[in-house]
Amino acid sequence: MARRSPLALAALATAAVPGLDVVATRSPQSTTADFQVTGVLDSGGRQWVVRCPLHPSAGAALEAEVVLLAALAPYVTSGALPFAVPEPAGFAALPEGGRAMVYRQLRGRPLDLERLGPGPGLAADLGRCLAALHELPASVVEDAGLPSYTAEEYRKRCLAEVDIAARTGHVPTLVLERWERALEDVALWRFRTTPVHGDLAEEHVLVLDGEVSAVISFSEAHVGDPAVDLAWLLASAPEDCLDAIEEAYALARPENADTYLLDRAQLVGELALARWLVHGVNTGNDAVVADATAMLADLAEQVRDAEPIGHREPVVVPGRPEDWAEATEDAEETDADEAGVDPNATAELPSLRADVAAPADAPAGDTQTAAEPEEDEEPEAAREPADEEPPARD
Image 1: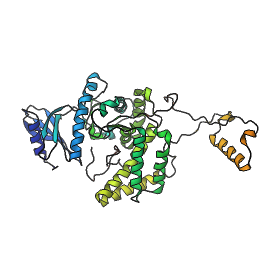
Image 2 (image 1 turned 30 degrees about the vertical axis):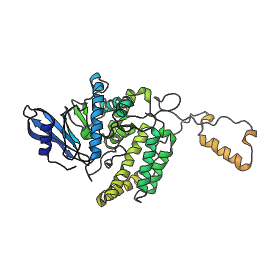
Image 3 (image 1 turned 45 degrees about the vertical axis):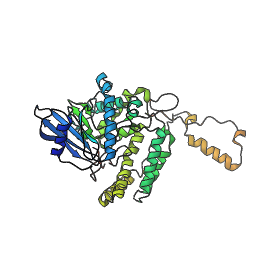
Image 4 (image 1 turned 135 degrees about the vertical axis):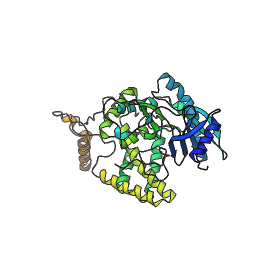
């Protein structure tokens, strides 16, 4: 589909909303690989947004988004979702097929993570808003025709991405081994999939009076790993704000504790570099390949001496010999095997089981876990697996 000027998009707005008299274009104005967006002002001083797809798959995603927005509206009205979402006011058919959507601009300004402060203010509200989205029924997204993945299906998608990136020859061996170990660690992938926005970024979260007022651009929504929506914050938000975000999120989802949520969010953020690399290779853009390769080299240095993703230190209680690490038991069994001794015939030994501490909010039994990129622009935070935009450099 052809790209259009802001004035051409304004003309689409007048065709989409009967009686709309556009007098000027204004922000937001952006062009990505999938959509063109422009703001317009009418003669009554009201502000509108035109969202126009640039290719057939983006057009199909927009149609699913329209259905999803209608399904989200009752949750906004009831307060289950503590933020507004776009309400389509009209559509304009495009000559090449598909249609553009027009909606009233929502109140608020794009989130500025650099100005985000610690404590119970906006940072905590971000955590609560994400939790509210993730607590919605999966059917809300599935009934809109958007993708739905189980935890195992999402893990396999990540494995496939790592395999493709590895074949480029630009991913350091240390990083590949780190990713593969995390993807094979079954403990990380025991979680309940949830509705996920899938494309959260500063420009898609609007803020008013110190609170999240609206969330926009749901074309990448799906049912999947809630860690996808947290990865961009872990990668880009000031470190002193993370505790407030994480605590507010956990308190808002007490019945769905996800022990390894943040570990997977870290992995999602790192895998965004692999997507950026593959995007550069597939498009033949040497500058993107060089940028991704440099960031992967930086990552390799940062994690060279780091613990594996999802690592947990065992808890040893002084004075209790039965609480020594499980490795001790394994070592003694190995020694017995090498000596040809039947371990069951030896004298009874005290328990050597290591008690590994679980988070206070972990449930009993099985553990459950829980803007669109400019073409060839500098990557930001992580995106959903189908996206190609990486996170910002550390």
